[in-house]
Image (tube, rainbow, N blue to C red; front, top):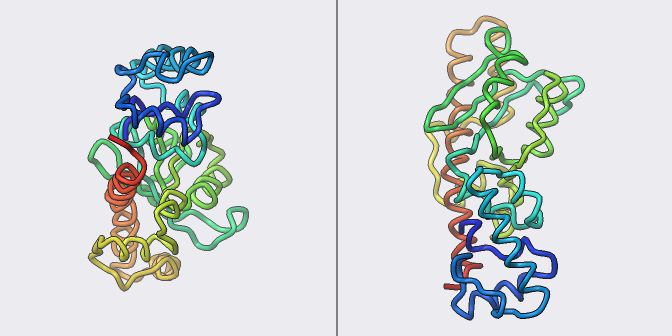
Length: 245
């Protein structure tokens, strides 16, 4: 679903009203006329569409992120997918105040980049990597990845953020990333490696074990690239469940 199919970003328009609009055959902004709902609400929708077109032309993801309810953030994805940054981190533990970020992988514009602690994982490189990211896409990133990076590197990642953990729950998928991938049929090259193994691999790398870092980086990159497949699948499923054509 694209933002141009959505009317729920208007004050006084909830799921029922939006569905009623769609059921009248008005499924795109271009098809809307205020008389479809009548009164002040119709005028508000018309103003939203007019303003929305300007913000859409400017690729202003933040505007629509603000307008849409939190539960409907997934609607941003299809329209702004090409401006998204999918990312995942590995750490030495679960406490952002005490533990270290070891690797960060980012996938955007079809390319995947991995930054490694002790090498190129710096605040400056992270700021550069996120500079053009108008929409963040993670799995549990709001509670884990973003707080870790902000605490460890003093960077600001407050921008539109689609956390797929919550999006998955909307279609009945629960558990960690690996479980969700398994449930929808996403295969991994190394299904035997887990987050706990990522901590172990970093320690082995620090102690000089050959191949440990390469395995860790491969695992982190696979986490990241799979986020795009997961986002495509989950938002597509929600589109089919929600949208009336």
